[in-house]
Structures are given as structure tokens and as C-alpha cells.
Length: 397
Image (cartoon, rainbow, N blue to C red; front, side, top):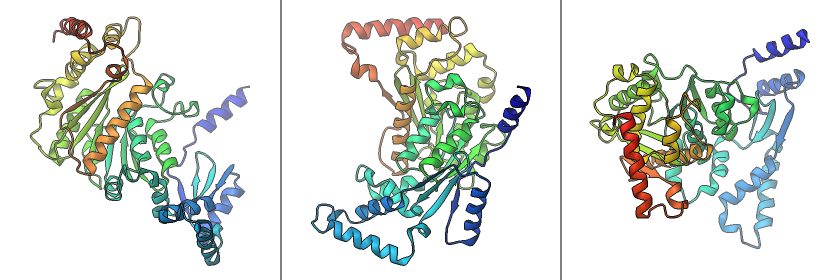
């Protein structure tokens, strides 16, 4: 039993390669690499659906033929032409995912992106897609930030994405982070990077596994390449302040999504358009890094409530906050709200990247308002106002 325990611990201590290997069967060195992986028994699964990818590519490149009687003939001519050039086995790229022990045959980068984002058209047009994919996006905090990252990448955004978090995935995170139990104990940066690469193996993910600090935050913004958009999903208020300090200095917009029960509060700070924008839009008052760094847990709760606005905090969230340290451990969060925030912030990032006009302050996205009966009746509004006023008094706001 002890021997088995030691074997498990030894296996856990191994470091995984974070980046997938992009291999070309036309290169002898890459052929040799794949043979070595087989010899070492590091490939347990192979996915080769390449011919189906080519069929989709043909459709995407020739939409005018889809309903034509000649479609099947034209498709077969296309495939035969490619077959005569070289075997499909030698075409495209082979991607090795070390953490999955998997080898996957895919189209080359440009064609892969073309097919992968084909169903975006024209909800996202070609020009917008290019701008979105070319934008360099940084995400600090990978709880809600994980949902944001995946929503961005799913939509074909941000080939270069920079992520920062110092925590490891805990069991209590799994009510709101879309992942599996096999990733428990893994750094959130590594977990999120793997998820991004599994969607787009041609992406470039830069990880900051120590989170954002006074020492590394400038590098996070400046790169190279320099950030185009900063997404703040950090818990640390003092670091949030430093984020805005760098954003102002480098003229980078800051987007932030906060979950509130089943709802979302999205804040937009356009330091790119107006570097004189007040930090947090002034909702916290005249705060400093030193002041925010010195706050205790109650002080942090007070400032967060002040920023979100007591009138925007749901009744159940208010009652839950008052029970922290009594009957519950920490700030309550829901997976649905994390995904809602992820979707909303990803859309905001796309609108910034494509220079689409949208709000420069705050958007409240309330599922309660849309789904709860009588939400906007006078009695319901009065009740919420009374509860919010009571909540203000408790925090001295």
C-alpha cells in the first residue's frame, strides 16, 4: 500500500508540457518525433477526421454550390485533386496534446480558422472576425475569467491571450468553472490554457501562474505584444487598482463582469478613449492602492458592495453576504451567472476590438427581471428599495 501511495505521488509531481506540439508529416524531424511518442507509449488516442474537414472547407469556400445539382461532383473533384498532390496523411498538421496523450489530424492554421468560425457568419462578418482574432486580450482572475476566456475563444477571438491567476482548481470552484474532476489541484492558468488549446491549438496562450503583482503587472500589459483589452476578474481590490493604473498609462480599456445571484453586472472603463476616466467610474470614491491593500474582509465586502451598488445586489445575495463567517464560508457564486458574465464580457471585448459603439459605463443584465413574475411592479420595486436601504445601513454606506 505504501509503495502504491509513493508511486501515485511521484506520478503527480511530474510537470506536463503546457503547449500542444504542431507537427508536419512532411518533415523528417516531426516524423521522428511522432515515432518516438509511439515508442514511449505516449499516444493513447488518435483522431483523424481530416477528410471530413476538407469537405467542410469546400462547402465554406463554395457556398453557392451547396444547393446545386453539381455539388457532389464538384466536391469529389476537389478531393481527388488534393489526393493527387499527396496523400491526406501528409496534408494539414498533426497536433500532439501531451496532457490528453492524443494525436489529432487537423487542417493548417488558416483553413482551420476558416472552417471553425464559418458558422459565425454574418453574425460576425469577415472584417470583424479578423480584428477580433488579432486583438491581444489579457484576463486576470480565472473563476468568471475562465468563462470569459472560453467564450472569447469559442467565437474566434484573440489568437494571443494572456491569463493570470495564482490559485489551483479547488472542489468548491466546480459549481461555476466548466471543467472536470481530473483537473482538481491543477493551476487555473494551466487548466484554462489547456481548454483554450483544445479549442484552438494554433492559439498562443501566455500564462502568469503567480497571478498579477506589483512586479509583473507592467509586463502583463506591455508584453510584447501590448494588450489591446484588459479583462479584470480579480478578487484582490488593491491589484484591481493597479490594473487601472496600468490601463490608464497604456491606454487600454478595462472590462469587468461581476456575478450577482443569477445576474450580471458588466463594467466598461474606456481608458483607450479617455485616459482621464475615473477608476471604477468613481463608485468606490477617492481610493488609493495603499487604502485598498489595508482593508480587512469586512472592509473589502463594504467596498465591493459600494462598487456594485446596494440597489443592484439581489435579496438572496444580500442575506448571504451577511452570513459569511457564520453559516457560509465565502461570497456565493453560481455557474449560470459565471457563464452569463462570460458571454457578456466576451461580447464587450468583441465590440471594443471591432470599434463598435456601445456603452462606456455599466450594463446590468438581469435574468430576474426577465423571468420573475411581477418583478417590475410597484410593490416589488418598493420591497427591493427597502431591503437595499437596510443593507446600506449595515455597511454604513
